[in-house]
Structure formats: C-alpha cells, structure tokens
Image (cartoon, rainbow, N blue to C red; front, top):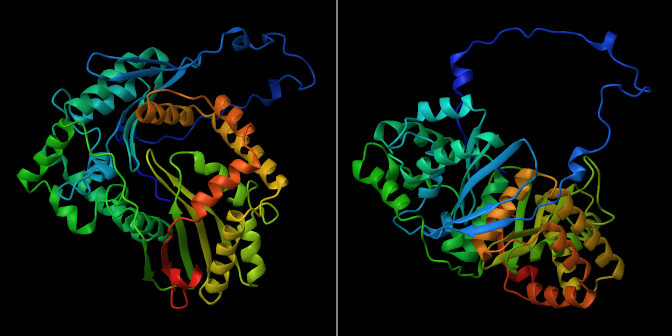
Length: 440
C-alpha cells in the first residue's frame, strides 16, 4: 500500500554534484577467516549493561514524556499527536493529509531551508507519518543530538507559519498522492471498506478527497489560516466510531476482483491472533502457505484459477475490523468468496483444532518478538500505547499473555466476531460478484 509519509528534502543532494567513487581494495590484506583477530575485543560489551524499561512522566501542560534506553548510538525521537483523519469534521476533511505533506516547511523561527540544513549537518533525518488516529513527527539522529532535534520538532509542531508561497509544493504532492492512490486498487478497496463500515470518524479517508483539494489552496487566504487554527487546537477531536452495515462494489476494467469482507472486531491488537489462526500471507518469500492458511486452502480447492486469500484486520483504540481479503479471477470470484466465508462460519462453530491454536500462538509470539528487534517498531508501539492507555506493555509481557490463551478463549472471541454484521468492499471486474445476501 502507498506509505503515508513525507521525508525531509535533502539539501546536500541538491547542492552537491555526483562524483565517481574512489575504490580501495583491501581483500589482499585481510586476515584468514579461520584465525582469530588479534586486535578484536571478544565478548559482548552490551551484555554487562542492565536492561532498561520504558520510563513515562508527564509535564505540567499534560504532555507525556516517554523514553527507553537501548544503549544505541542512534536515537529515534518523535511527537505523537492524537489527531488524524478520524478527528476531521465536514469542514476540515482532508486536512491531515495536507498537514502531513506540509510538514517541515518554514515556521515562525526558521525557514524550511534552515531546518533541512541544520538537521542534515547534525546527521539527523525527519519524517511525518499518519494513520487514522495519529499524526507523527519523528527523527533519527545521533544520541548526542537528541536535545537539538527535539527543539526543532517542537518548533515545527508548535509554531508553523503555513506561508502561502510554501503551500504550492505540498498541494502538488497531495495531488500526486491521489493519482498514485487511484492506480492502486488495494488502497481503494480498504478505504471504501472503512467508509461503509464506519461512515464517519474512522470512516474518513486517509486522503484528501479530490473535491476538497481546493479547500487548502494557497490562493485562498482564509483557507490556509484554517491549517494554522487546526494545529493551534492541538488536533483535539471526538473519540467515537460508528459501525454501519452495507456494501460497496465498484467496476474497474481488468481480469481480477479485489474484495474485503469484514465485521466489527475487538480493538487494537487482539485481532492479530485471529489473523494467525485463519491464515495470513506467506512467511517465506515466494513460498506458499496453503498448509497453514485455511482460508487460502479453501479458496484454492474451490477453483483451478489463480487466487489469493488471507485474514484481514484493522485495529483502532475503540473498535476494529476483522475479515478476509480475497483476490480472484472474475469468473471464479463467487466460488472463492463463498468458500472463504464458509471457513469463517466453521471457525465460529468450533471447527478449530488444538494444532491450529498452538500454531497461531507460536506465530503470534514470533511476530511480536521479531518486531521488537526493530527500533522503529518499538518507537511506534510505545507512542501508540501511551497515547491510547497511558501505560506501556512490553512484547515479552504480551507474549506471556498469548501463552495463556486457551481454545475456549478463541471460540468465545470467534463467535462474537463472526456473528457480527458484515461489510463488503470490492473493486475490479465485479460483474459476477455476489452480494452480502448471497454470501451469508
């Protein structure tokens, strides 16, 4: 899917010319691999350092400050703002998309050029990302430069200027995002699923709708002031999600059908385990997971044509969606969709073996612990948890909870989720696509 991020433009690349690299070959002087290095210090220096836990404190203004010591020479810092597309009103639809693209422009203290030059000089990088619930301004930097980077992040967030002449670039980038979105059918299917299932709040698009692009045009003075007033309000919005019932089917030329069926599910990562239970994408590159993915196995048995199927989930602070994503030939779409829906029905009636439960638990724990090895993943996980519940649960603690899950727990959640009211979103050659009334 199209990543919703905007990186800091590189000054060094634009001010320097490219030269041929100087090659130096040292292979002839290298030590044999079967002999120990005389000047190499054995042992793990970091093994003697105590493992640190996440530290959380609050400032007088309510800002939560969270830190985790990893003893790494590189640090990642960021501001998580609890405001994104779900907080937009009819008057501000699309503003999060524009704010993300307008990140790191000039502010009341520094111009965009100075911000880029000073941060690159310190070895730092900046990026802005967003999802449906939060907007994140973050930076990778050397640990000695954290204080300097934090000051720049604060000025970017607290003192944006949104000069009209600087908004032309973000507006062009916004239109490019929309063009790229329209070319990727997977994005449109998931966006339509949210629109139909939630209507408002979580149903608001991650993208500025085409008819709203003129609302933030630099030619309209009153409109760019809307950007500033929105940021001054600290992105505060109502925390609600309305789940609706319905279906949306869009015809697009092409031989394939992309379809998502989902019902309301539990909030946040409680859905990931159900994903592992029913089947996700392959763990081995270019490999097949028909043996462990029961929805793909059912889909493959229903047709001789090529198809793909996996569990689908979208988790948020107060709600979520759970279902399946299917790609199939137009002619075989009805059979594939019905076979996948049948697997969900069987799971809700207790057709889950002990082997399935054990495999899903192992895959879930591997997913949690492997992701915890990435500093970027830990960074986003900490920020999301602190904004949502004010405390942090480590991957190890979550893995211990996964170990305690029983088959009865799985069946209880499965019956609740799979008995919900479904929503269908499909795009492609949908001439033979069955409706919800034919699938359930």
